[in-house]
Image (cartoon, rainbow, N blue to C red; front, side, top):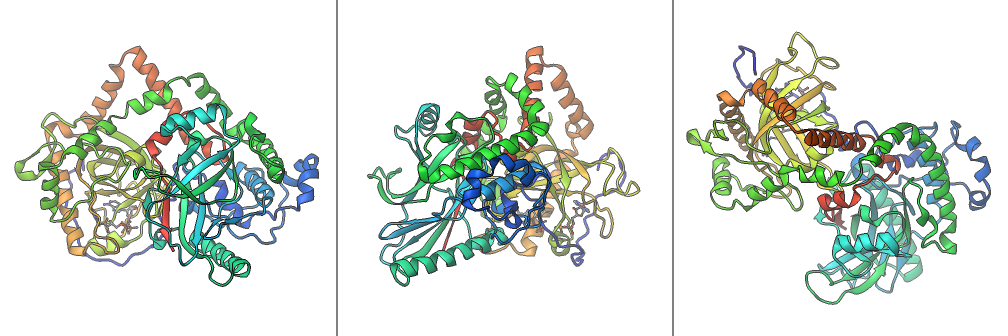
Length: 601
Ligand SMILES: Cc1cc2nc3c(=O)[nH]c(=O)nc-3n(C[C@H](O)[C@H](O)[C@H](O)COP(=O)(O)O)c2cc1C
Ligand SMILES: Nc1ncnc2c1ncn2[C@@H]1O[C@H](COP(=O)(O)OP(=O)(O)O)[C@@H](O)[C@H]1O
């Protein structure tokens, strides 16, 4: 702790968990909930004829009037944020979009398509609202017992009515010459990694589809093999798509062979979009009515939330994202670290006596390991943090699980509402300073204002399967606040000063023993205390430095700063959640990579 006489004395006494609870929802947009996850209690899709004829009565149908829900299973799209306890009425963007989603989603009556040996079942509704880099589609692949899925199976996104700008973008993004885009999910996860509500909904879909397949093709003609959550790249824009299951065609260099295709689906944002009817056929026409309804309702409401920000964003649009991304020194440093085979990685392995897991796939930037002096106890040089550190951000204290407190005697704060770029770029164990802001959840007698504590910051693989590679951020403050003290919901500022080590992931299906975790944790705390105890590593000096770095910038740089700020604001406004496309989708695609995940059945 800084400006305090208290000694650090970790308490390792075991106490029972007092409040087991959930983690943050992994949503970058704070409290905002994904409209797609709220459909489970939503509206019963009106009958087909009404779709075509009821448009003039929309306002009376959707303005404030709760409409009774007859049934509807959850429509899983986003396993990290399923929230079945939602309202079905009102004029919030989400409830309006829900209505529209059900309104339109029930209209295309082909949730599965089969060939002789393969079936693709679509779990997601036919109408998928754009939700930024997390736009995704869930399917389950079935195949006949004689045709298990080959390991080199691939999934491709094919746009119907593919042309114009979108075509060019897709091509430039994948460097391909055709309109097919490889969207094979990058990560395999276990069923236990899935959000339970979502998992159950998929299982219900699978049982229903299995029964239908048995009736139509004979008992057990096709059996479930894999469920895929495919990330729909932003470059795909609005329009009609289907997924095509193939074998070969990637690095293997072999020719791509089509096995089966998914039912068609529609990706729609609420931006005014001339491609609305592109790719639509007679059988999909009704859905367009739904989309129009949704756009009409959502854009009216969303305008109030997002219009000012989007307007500003549009003015500063050119090149902004490039600058933003270019400024991410993380990337370069991350690469350096990844290239550091040899001394650095060996040190981590032996230092903690574990096999260390490096950053996965597309995760950028682990930060810098600095130099280890003083018998391996400090990170970084005497002159203070090295680029890209210090990195400052803020989050909110979420609910804990009680596990760390009980098992290690070390409670850790699960930080939620952390900016998306932090969750995407940090991966591993870091050290720095943290300050709990006065206000909600904070007893001023226990936590003084403006008090910076030495902190271990853990950016670990997200607890639930997620469409893009994000981390959960946990903070351990090197201070004993007393028995059972919590500051849930408080705001916390964090300054990351340096990188200690990659996260240690024990072998799949196992957890590190309490003793090993305690060993790692106490080593981290010691490195943190020793490193931050040096002259140029204090919080005040760091804050001054951060300020000076800003004030010594040229006017041009400052202008860039301002633009970055606008960009951040845009990213924070839940525009993606309500289906508005902002600029920079392609850059985001590059950052997030193919994304997606799959489970074996
Ligand atoms: C400073 C610190 C570092 C830790 N590092 C690791 C680690 O690398 N791997 C691991 O499996 N557990 C590690 N742990 C232990 C778990 O993260 C611990 O069980 C966690 O605090 C429990 O929180 P949770 O229930 O929210 O997951 C560490 C704990 C602390 C306090
Ligand atoms: N030294 C500390 N570091 C971080 N959080 C602390 C500390 N002391 C108390 N807390 C509080 O305790 C909570 C975590 O404890 P708990 O809910 O038992 O979860 P866990 O055991 O999962 O870490 C934090 O959210 C925070 O409010």
